[in-house]
Every structure is written in C-alpha cells, then in structure tokens.
Length: 248
Length: 199
Image 1 (tube, rainbow over the protein chains, first blue to last red):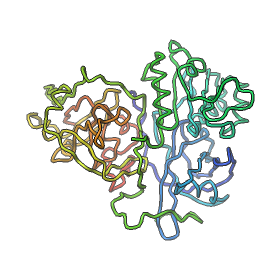
Image 2 (image 1 turned 120 degrees about the vertical axis):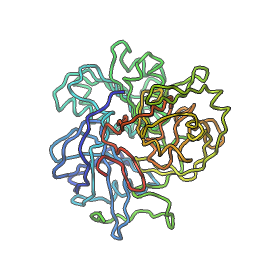
Image 3 (image 1 turned 90 degrees about the vertical axis):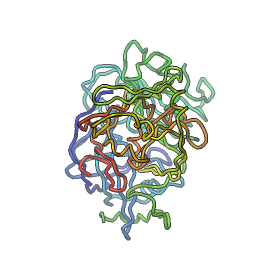
Image 4 (image 1 turned 60 degrees about the vertical axis):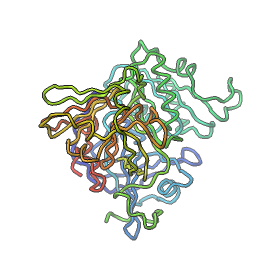
C-alpha cells in the first residue's frame, strides 16, 4: 500500500448549517459553512462533535458528499432509528445552528482528478456518499475519466441523488443499479443481492486496471471486494470503506 | 467544553466510566480495513519477528498454536469512535514470542499480509499488553476481523491491532505505518484521545 502525504494538525472548527436537502425520507444532505476550511479530496471524511447544554458531547465520523468548494462542506446523513446523533442531525439541526467539525481525514480512500485510469465505484446503500463526492469532483474538474457506478439499494425509494445520477449518466458516468428488496416496475430481474454477474457486466475488465472504490455495510463490501478479486482485479487497486457491525 | 449545539441532548450511558473521551458504546463488532480481506491459507501461514540485525524468528501455524495461549478479556477502542467492552480473545502473548529474541530496538513496525503496516513502541507490546490473537469469543478469528491471526494491543486505538499480521520488525527508529503516515496519531492512546497528529 502506498502512503499519503502528511497533513498538519486537525483543529476543531465551528460549522453552521447553511442548507438542507432531503435525499430520501430518512437521509438528509447538510451543507455547512466552515470558515477557514482547508479543502479536501473526494472520499475523505470529517469528525463532527455535538455538545449539549450540560457539556455532554458525542462525536461521529461522516463522509464528505461533495468536493471542496471554498468554505462549504456537504455531508449526507442516514437516520439510524436508535441512533444518538443521526436523528438529531436529520430532524432537529436547523439552518444557522453550529456544530464542531474537524478534518479532512483519511488519505487512502480518495480519488484524484489527475488519475488517468478508469474508475469503478461500487456502493451499498448509504455507501454512495463518498463515491458521489468522486462523481461530483469529476464533473467539477471537467474530467473525462471513464467512470462506472454500480449502486446496490434495497428499493428505488432509497436511492440518494437520483436526479443528479441521471444527469451524470449523460456525461460519461455509467450508472447501474442492483435492487435487493424491491425493484422498480418493469425491471427485468427480480430483486437480488450483488453477485459476480452484476460486477462483471457493470464493472470494468480487470485488464483495464481500473481504480476500484467499494463502500457500504461490512457484508456488502466483503462480498463486492471478494468478487473483484475473483474477477482478477489487483487487491492493491481495490480500496474499501466499511461501516456497521458484522453479525459476529 | 465546546460550543453548544442547540437542541442536542444526547443519550448518556449512566455511570459507565470505562469509555475514553469521544467514544460511544457498540454492541456489534464493526469492521474497518482499507482493502479486500486477504485469504491466508494456514499451510503456508507464517509469523515472524525480525530483529534490527536481520535475525528472523519464525513460527508456522502449528508452532504458534502449540505455544501456551492466554484468553484476555479486554475493552477495545476504534478511532472511528466505537468502543466494545469485555471482548474475549485467545492468543499467544508477545512476552512468550519475544522471550528468545535478542534486541536493542525501541520500536516495531508491524507488517501484514495485505501490505498494511503500523508502528508502536516495543514496550507497548510487552508485559502482558499484547497478543497474537487467533480466537475471538470462543471461535476462530473470522477473516474480516483479521483471521487467521492479528495483533491485539487493546490499550491503544484499534488500528494498532493490525489484522492479518505476518511480521513484527524491530527497529531502532520510529517509522510511521500506513495510517500514521496519513495523519493519524503516532501513538494512539484512546484515554488521551490521540486520534490524529497533534492531538
């Protein structure tokens, strides 16, 4: 594994909510103003710290959903029913409210718009977020790097960024979906989980030596990464970001 | 105390004083790895300790399993904020593995089957603080959690407990590993919240 450059110290900054967009009934994008934000690469994440009146605080990590844009930073937060932080961020946190934030964090799961090789993005559920930052960075840079996205969701209603992905498909990002619980009307296949056939037909041949980014729940990432290796992809070109517990 | 976020109350875990700052309690066992899970066949599996003089001490799978094992029950703390309490492991103490190793090194660089590396002071691996673990919760250690064997150093953030370990390289100088070279803290003490450089 190659190493990334050494960044400086990460200080907490005050971020204020500037804009919200609901992506699905349970996922909300938060656009934050962070004065002095140093910029970031698509795929990186931030730590968010919330502090209650009595001083109690909680921290969580969230992927950045959009490339660097001055002092603006965008996250997409999936509400977890019994969560401590995500229900607050998606239901209570209001325009103008402050949180503390620091980053960017992580120098491995990143895409640089100068990288010439084709890109394969494989997302499971809310794992789309850092991959969307890469798609948006490609557009912002006017890059013509060949991109393919394979996006596994339970139902059509749970697709994040649906309109924007349709637009991306017009500008050289090939988007394929896998529906695991309920497919749209007229979809040619019954719902099923991601398998060799999906990765083989929606991905790039291994001999194209694509950069592969896989993000999603643990079981999904294990499956997708194993399939990529079975199809001959070099493990050093398969970067992963996993979230959530295993059943173990 | 930081700035107050209006309307945030949080959900306190009453009386639970065992969590380091900024951590929350997790009952599952999240997986964090930078790449695919390597499949390491036990027939060719090997664990080595390499001294600063280049002397290699090596153990096959059968040789490792023949050593006296311990069953530490420890709390683990991931830099991504989750902590899991009272996890039960089975493995061989580094004290046992280092017993016949002659070294003047102060540091180690740990190497893994997937290319991952992490650095620690040697003293953090000794005196009952670290194990080469191959069992978890009464079972074999699952591949996604580092099986067949991983380093277990529970008093530091869990990225130091390298999965799929194959070599501990003893070094005279401190050489940053994979995450340490990418902005994460060199030492990683969860109780001092040493997540990133400068913390």
